Image (cartoon, rainbow, N blue to C red; front, side, top):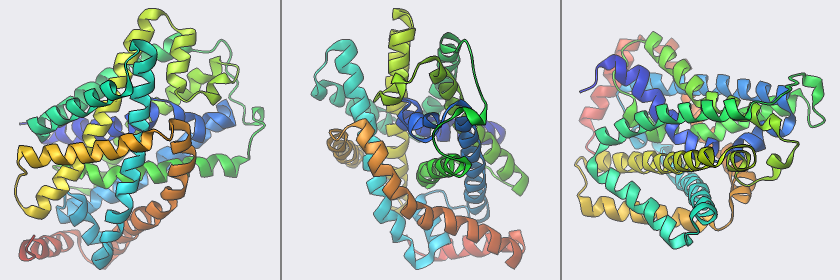
Length: 373
């Protein structure tokens, strides 16, 4: 059993960073779409705005968990949305399909390029990997996500060391694309739609006791999420601009500027990162179903859930990575911001001034105990 300190300051940031990493940082496409297209300096400013937004959203969410002890997204949204909790339930599956679509398309592209594997083989491997780890259980999943996240940071550091540009112009005047409002807005939009999956990962948030702990864990988690964006964004400055058009920018960089050994090493790491994102999201949905049924799911039911979820995402992946990110996420993110980001922030602010924290927690916990699941 992990200590409370390790759970809070190691596992929680690692799980959140791991799930965010695969869908966007693993491929690098989101870094291009929301940061790097503006130039080196403006891109860093956009990342900074994302980091601040991530912190505020995480802090608010962690405070809801701390005060109400709700660790699955269904119960969480019943707290902040009341009778309209089902709105997230309607929107989230669409986001899930898009994220899994990105993962599926990326794995297919890498497998075909490096191993000449047909799509059915690579997608089946993804399905089996997620299924087997899901059946082992939540503690194993958290341990795997934590360990692989640490490994990926090492890989990213090597990636940046190899790809570090000879010259780096961080001037805000160096960009010919957009204004300060565009840069900051892009960063906020990126944070808004990525944060939409945060409630699904609440199963990893355990042991919070004070508001100061919520703030520290939120800050550490936001930093862990945004660090890879900084590393990749800076590495793209080595390229003259073709990387901005690549469907897998990170893979493009490592194949064009790295050694064969680094290509192989990074390909393995990238596939593992994509798997851990799918794994974290699937586990969040399983936690929600188990909480609603108030019992653990059988291996058979878990297998069916994994198969249905990943199959739907694989179908979406046929649209292509660039189209999924450029078109699908932007439209959906606004709705998710209104359903999640705005309500959770309002709830924390309003409850902070309406009653003492201990009274708030006891009230919501008593309601949870009285309400049959």
